[in-house]
Amino acid sequence: MTRPIYLDYNGTTPLDPEVLDAMLPFLGDEFGNPSSSHWYGIRPKQAVEAARRQVAGLLGCLPEEVFFTSGGTESNNHAIKGMARALRFKGSHIVTSAVEHPAVLEVCTCLQAEGFETTRVAVDDWGMVDPGRVERALRPDTVLVTIMHANNEVGTVQPVASIAEAARARGIAMHTDAAQSLGKVPVEVSTLGVDLLSVAGHKIYAPKGVGALYVRTGLAPEKFCHGAGQEGGWRAGTENVAGIVGLGKACEIAARDLASAMAHMRELRNRLHEGITSRVPDVRLNGHPEHRLPNTLSLSFRGIEANRLLEEIGLKVAASAGAACHAGSVAVSHVLEAMRVPVEWAKGTLRFTVGRMTTKAEIDRAVDVMAAAVAGLRAA
Ligand SMILES: Cc1ncc(COP(=O)(O)O)c(C=O)c1O
Image (cartoon, rainbow, N blue to C red):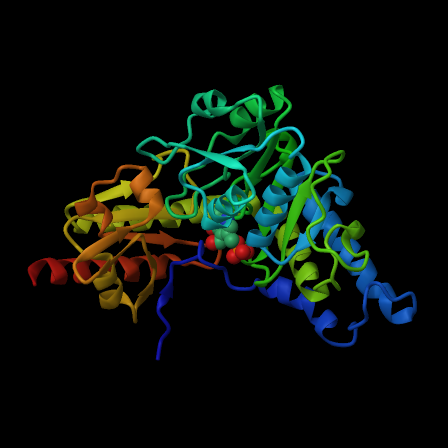
């Protein structure tokens, strides 16, 4: 059986073969614990520190400002809970946006049980946060602003630098979830002006279960995981050495190939968009037309149910839905809802995301599949 064409790179990415090669020794002979002072600990320890330098190289920060975690969710938890709790003596208000990933929104909700208050800033019809709105939401008791760099569903890239400027002018810490932007657009902590930034390995061709958090020197989020002294005593637990080595290699590749990867993704994403719109009527694009990840295409097919469309294409194209219809009711994603996408469009939303391994031939086949599936459902 031929496998469906993979157009869900925002969901996760395949492992880059170069990443796998870098990891293999640490799943084999180099099994030592980096904390061991004997011979077996030497290479793993060196490899973890080399990976830290590779991640720092991509982010433009110091290696000692990079902490390894288990992924984007954990990094967001560390950043938001860690900063909020450490700064509790100053205030208990957090500003975020309406279109964050649950790995931010749920963390903020959890903090509400501890007495924190959250303001979720609204977005415009393109899913964009207005820095002015963030600025107006800031209060004397605001301790943290957390706004994602790029949205996972529609790809809108937020004006993080302007938002960070407003936050930092008032001495408020700024975190950004860069799980989706890293490797797709330039992500540099000083250009963005952020204090904390989350990285997810499996979105940049590294394995699942590894990530990183950048913490600007001088900040002291509350220790999150207590135990032995790994990661500067801040995140205890024996390191996922192979995963960390993979993340480091993936960051090195992302830095090396960013320009060509961006051009490749943009070309194929646009080819898919043009192919579909030239053959299928009543389609609309979600997300910002320009300030958008080069790989992301969120399309709404008017009058169609996304899960019916996914069933129709499921053996041929792997994409993801922006709404789920159950027993006559429609659950539209919080992102499309925040963007005020009308429900007759929103319920037929699919997200197609291309990546470094996507080919033109795959895109052309996917266009054929989509044109036939939509026509079939509309005729039925
Ligand atoms: C924007 C964003 N943040 C966080 C995450 C969670 O990352 P992880 O799967 O590594 O926990 C994702 C994953 O989809 C994401 O898209």
